[in-house]
Image (cartoon, rainbow, N blue to C red; front, side):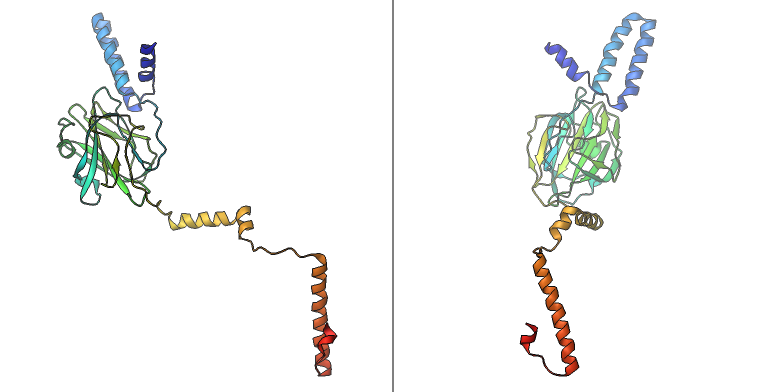
Length: 296
C-alpha cells in the first residue's frame, strides 16, 4: 500500500510541457532498439520512466503570508549567508543575504516564484558548466537572473538566479520584464540538475538551515520585515476613490445628516416668510418703520 501511494504521489503527477519532447524521444528510441534487439527494450523502459519522473510538476500548496519568501526549487540548502551581489542583478550595492538551493538529478526541477510581485529586470549571462554546488558557480556558470518587485516599501526588490550546473545545459524561463507572478507560481525549469539562488536584504529573517531539504512553492526560506504596502499609482488611486464615491453606501455616508422636518414646522416657516415680505413692502410704501408687534 505504501509503495502504491509513493508511486501515485511521485509519478502520477502533471508533467512540465518542456519534458514531453524528451519523453517522446526516449520512448521512440526504446521501441526502435527493442525491435532490433529485445533485451535493449527493457533497458530503455526504465530510462523513459526516469525521464517522466524528472519532468514531473507536482501540485503544491503555497503559504499565503505576504511576508514569506518561498523556496523556488526542490533540493538541499547549500548556504545561508552574506555575499556580494552578482553584477547582473542591478540591486543596490552592499552585502546581501544569499540562500542557495542545490537540485540533484532526482529532484523536481520546476522553478517557482519566491514571492508575489512583478518582474522588474531579467538578465541572461553566458558562462561555464562547473559543479553547481561550488561557491564560484554563481559567478562562473551560465545563469539567468530575475529582479522581482515585492510591493513592500521596506524591501522593494529581491533577486532570484537560476544557475546551470555540470550536467544541466539549458535554463528555461517563461517570464519577461513586466510580467506578474504569484508566490509559488511556476516560471521556469533547469534541465538535468543545478541550483537556484535567492538574494535578500540583511533585514530579512532566514528560517532554514544549511543541509535542510526544501519543497518548491511550500517551504518558507525567510520572512521579510514588516513595512507599509506600496502606494497605488495616482491614476489607479483616483479611479478607486471615484468608484467608492459613486456607490450607494458611500453616498449615504458622505451626505450631510439633517433632522427630518415635520409638516407643521414647514408650514410655520412658510407663513413667517410671506409675512416678512408683506411687512417690508408696506414699510417701503408708507415710508415709516412698522412696529415689531405687527409682525409677531
